[in-house]
Image (cartoon, rainbow, N blue to C red):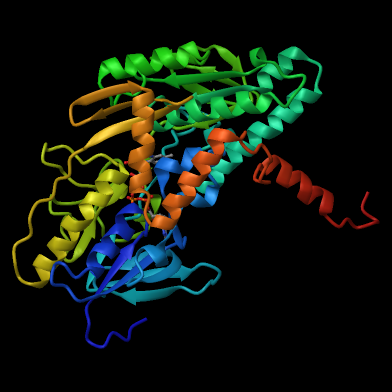
Length: 445
Ligand SMILES: Cc1cc2nc3c(=O)[nH]c(=O)nc-3n(C[C@H](O)[C@H](O)[C@H](O)COP(=O)(O)OP(=O)(O)OC[C@H]3O[C@@H](n4cnc5c(N)ncnc54)[C@H](O)[C@@H]3O)c2cc1C
């Protein structure tokens, strides 16, 4: 990986929203930089997260919420690899190609760390059983697994006679009532109720959704009136809302809430916050804050380093208001040109400029063609907010082909019922299939 013909090389760790948009920006050579760009990511695609839950719940094809990195940033080189270490002195990053055990390394002139975030899981002594029993919403497989599980539970509930057990099976608990949790409950509730029409022994009363949020209100990122509207809308749909309340134990067949109540349920979806990528801890010499985030100056340069930059969810960068910029795709995308400009400034011996990207707005779909939105001081709720969410994210979906596919999915969905077949992702069913196919020793008892 080291024949460079004298050209400078920028290595980007993570080809998600931040990394891929930066690679695209650098390849435009708008900043007078003519460099080689290499992205290292464990996947050859990034997820267009705003559509992930719709993809999981069958409103769009799962593949249609992914963006192939090679097509999105065709001038960058992509290494599909796991980042495993850093040697700051030698200016080298260590990595392992996916499907290969060898540890390799690549030299950089500038390194940009854009490794994103993971779902935050509390330590066992604070909330127990989350890793073992809860479901997350971060990867494509998570979204499809939740949908598969919902279908499996409907099948199971339909086949049993005990009404109490049927209600337990079809009780879905969502922990975390901010944007992701509310999107999940809004979409999944529609999916499960519509799917239940195919099951003769399952009635509407057997299905229950509950949301637990530690804050005093749902959707704390939105102005209060929108949060109140959303809460009322969800409650009118029969969704049980618990604010100022959390979950302290997660078990396979129940949860225990912060007041000690035992709540029978079968599926817990954990959407209670995010943490910076744990991969940062493997990058020796990079300063991390108490939350594990990469400490950066306001121009995105990592504190006390040369030519190392941080952006996106994994980086703690002060915005214009003096607070760290929020971990959102809209922020990572708009940081990309600022990072590119500052790298160019360093290369050309000019001073860098502080960045600072402000939140443009928050749009939250609630399912059933309703939503809430606060954009540049304008507050909207209901059908208009939902339609706006769809229009904006359709326009923001990278590449024309993907946009047309998403639009086609939505259009078909408006006229036909969603597909309720499983995609074979539920770990329970996979385990059972593997068990059945195991070749057993005939002498084994
Ligand atoms: C369900 C959901 C819905 C969301 N909806 C919205 C929304 O509507 N609007 C909005 O603005 N934001 C939304 N977000 C937030 C948004 O997705 C993130 O803020 C954004 O993706 C951050 O970009 P990033 O580049 O920092 O990280 P990411 O896009 O996550 O990219 C990080 C990349 O690093 C790679 N990576 C990580 N570790 C390694 C490693 N060790 N080796 C190799 N590669 C590695 C990953 O594969 C990934 O491609 C949502 C998030 C979720 C989970």
